[in-house]
Image 1 (cartoon, one colour):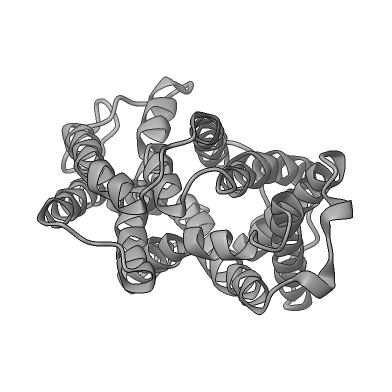
Image 2: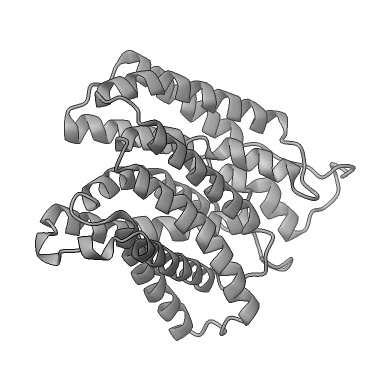
Length: 322
């Protein structure tokens, strides 16, 4: 974003948040279906390589400038953190833990991002609304975890949970660094490059871990194939693009509030598609989580020493409004 750019219309911000909140809440179940008959890293690699290649081609065809060498380096780093370390860790872990549990563990992302932003050079301590929202969201997750885990009827696999925690750290670091490295001016080019490079790294991880001999196209089920298509179109092209756009126009901490809402969506999907019960405690936890999101997304941050009446630039408006 440049100082001369106007703040994005509020409807675009709301639409982007809705896409990340709702679509990504459903991708946990879609991942579970996809890896039923496909190896995890290769499935994820195909997903992002196809989505990234299509998006990059479309942006360049529409006239976006050719990215520079430094941009490929930056997008490889960010794509590696977000997709190989972040999404790849989630996909691998879902072989060992239920999708609902995965969504619950990933919900720690906003906490990591808030702490990383604070400790980064030039970072600022989170304001009281963000701090209260993070605490409230964590409380909601504690309330949600017990009935969610019980309804899934499985003991939590510690190795799977450990992989999820590493994935959340990678995703959080990638989200924070995405605002601190040189990237192409076009958001679509940036998103396409990050997905493309992340997809290539995931494919490499699949080859290195011996997944290729496990690929049997004739044995891929219809449900797995449809799940992969859903992950490419909705999870990657729409959801991931919306998330990276939110990172460009606002705070990573606010963009990461999707991690608080995704478990709520996952619980409802489990109830509607798998017959998992929803208790009164679950409803209360969801209300607490929604309250946390409202606190974080409605907060306003100010630079130290800034005068309240001073006119702000467009860049500053983006940082404080969204």
